[in-house]
Image 1 (cartoon, one colour):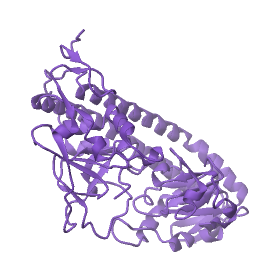
Image 2 (image 1 turned 90 degrees about the vertical axis):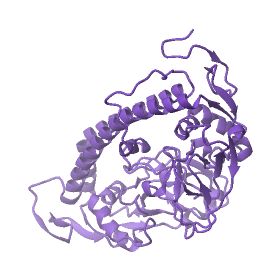
Image 3 (image 1 turned 45 degrees about the horizontal axis):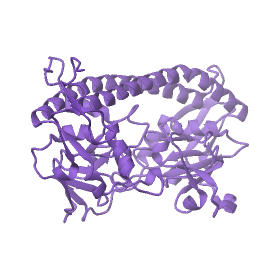
Image 4 (image 1 turned 60 degrees about the horizontal axis):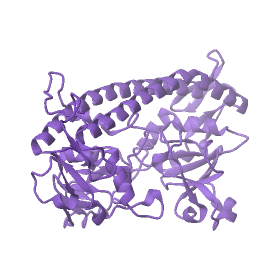
Length: 472
């Protein structure tokens, strides 16, 4: 029975993951509307596009990603506005979308062009193709040796049914959803601004205690360090290379080299700026022994590539699921010298705002691929309290920043719930579960493209690298 917000009548959808769809909507396989194209750039000078599970197809210049830039983009695939672009390897993560831009993408991606430009509003299609129902279909049709390496090939994508309202309904759906997105984006931006303030407050507390200690009345002396005016009399100054071993040799675990034992695998996107590990993969040791960065539990890792270094990506690996692990070559690994520094205190030093600012100034390399030199990190001067005082400082910092951490986590949960609501709203509207044909734009339904950018990143723009460009 129809409700006030539903269509008068429905029929069963051909795609198994979809709910019943409005009876008058068309539904045909994707090949009815699209064909695969393989046009290549002869100059490599076109706009470089990024394909993300969060934002679809967007100019790379607008993204904060850490993927490498190629020396030449000659031979990259060309795409036009209205084309569907799919990262074949990451379709199961919804790394695809309908492009609004002309440009170039990875040769490994699939590009599909409409037979008729009027068949779909590209934005409606972009919403539809990244709903959970369609992502489930990509996963089911993809092939590969493990879940993280599934590939969606052209014949499989083109066989998927697409639901097609009339063009006027598509346009109305797009207007409605973009208005709702504008409201959601403003809320997310306000929440993220609050998180940024709390992080700034937390950083101020950490920097003060780590460089000055807990006793404001203690006698001090000149530190001899440009960025620290004075330190407690009994503290010492030293370079990081005197208290930490850099990039430890994997020879200590050589017995495991050809082993099938499972180890933790840590791409850049699996570690946040506050040192938390998320979605750590498990790999066989023999698969990752060569070509990746080696570390052990309780080592400290830090990103060396921009912008991850400036954002403080890295931290103490005290919760690594296995004793040893491997990760991206864009990590620098530090192992605390037991009698000099606690691993957690070392991680705090590397998280300091001043360390990141000075390191950013020392970076070398081409734009977009700059890295902090290892020599800078090794020779960075720090003030070091005795071990017992390091323990006191770490305990005090936990108490002092608990309130900020709890508030930040609560706000992030609010944002996550709102994103879930948005996903459900989009799915309901683009599949016809909610009829928005009578909706009219209100005075506060203003859509600002710059504001919509807030939809693109979880948490605070700093905690996660975008997934979806892995084959650029």
